[in-house]
Length: 257
Figure 1: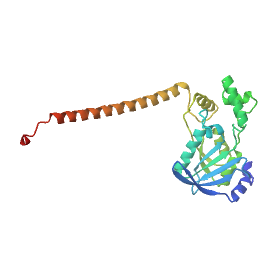
Figure 2: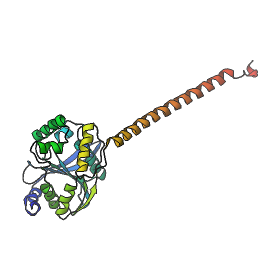
Figure 3: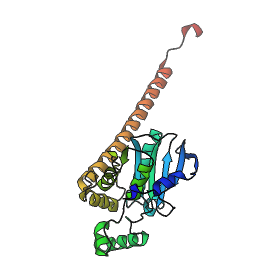
Figure 4: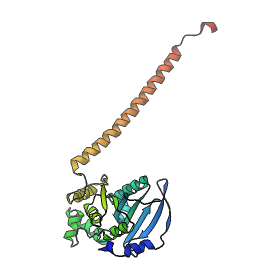
């Protein structure tokens, strides 16, 4: 198994760069390592001055669409942002960023999957299978090897994916699951999240009625706030009008007549 070899320990033995990184108005110390013996597989980003057991860990696979294009069609960018927010609030944590675009099949396969889905209505998992790709080619052995090499015995894993939890536990680490639930920003994203949920991801149901109820609640909150603001303004105007009327009706001072 990868966590029994010396590759990860060799990576930790090299001189690795450290510096401060600014994000959302705050700074954290950042240490950067390669996953394995080169940069091809990904990187480990260690945040904070001190890493302890039970720290927050995010194992994340590259998604150009969600992270660079900020696509509304998946939850990858939103999940990564939420994970980094949690790590930043905690003051320390680990992000293992793996070069596993398109669930390990690559960007071209991912684009073909989207194209197939647009033509047929199939989700990305079914599209991959129809095109001859495995539904998910990702592996987490290298990521787990880095966690073991860091000397961690327990982690709080930021994920909805039970396969990541199983991979970390298989290495002997204690794992507490910290889910990352985001709201879909499009119908395609809703279908994608629902496809992941039925395949075992720890996600709430994203069926249409619940989504519409969420949208209705948001609409009602915005309208309620507007009504409150109008009512306050009307009350203020009525009060000013009454004060002005009293000034006009005030009796003259007989002493100055």
